[in-house]
Length: 283
Image 1 (cartoon, rainbow, N blue to C red):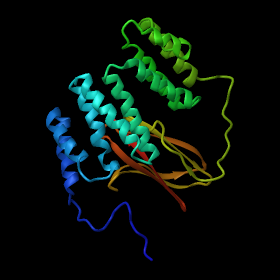
Image 2: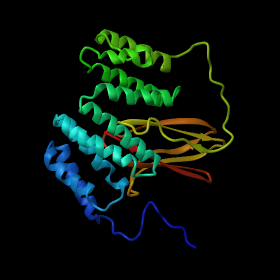
Image 3: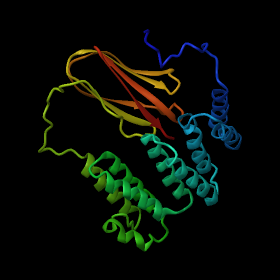
Image 4: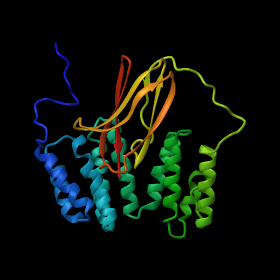
């Protein structure tokens, strides 16, 4: 049996676009030139097509971006919130559920439902304590609290009042304290350098991300390392690494500021080891 190339299928000619790809191309051109209403028409066509939820993800994400850029009414975001919550129930893909849940929370902010949005961010903090995901959710909660007029008294009851922001100075003080606690350097602690026992490609973090994320991997032996980014259609987007590296633990930053929202694949090849994972760019 011959191996099947799943990244570069051979049943299509180079340059040949599907109907859905043409819709996306048109929508993206309109979006980046500021023609948001016209772009939304094409994104709606993609959403209403028979394509997979993975393929429609960027269109759903753009709906939120368009609403924010055009300062749509709270009613617009109420409808989006209902749609995103419904989608979390229709997929078994953990990553997609996470993305649509995040979009639903952002839509709460668009509805001006700031306190419920802070509650959702705090749930992430409580469920992922000690993780970077919790740190970023904490930052989102603090930033959203700035939008609460008069700082709703219910904020003082949540998480011992840590989201109760008195003024801009109080916000920056709490934000700085949070960042120093989680990312500050502790001089009395040193990381023990231990060579990894096996090849490992870790899930990128943060994920979803905008516009940059970190990819980590372990090498138990030296070898030529290739780390390549592909789009969901299997087209090569960028080669992050293509050189010899000694054994050790590594991390590399991927900056996707010039790319559109969507699902991307990062693949690591070194010696006989090949691994790939999905990541989500959510602008």
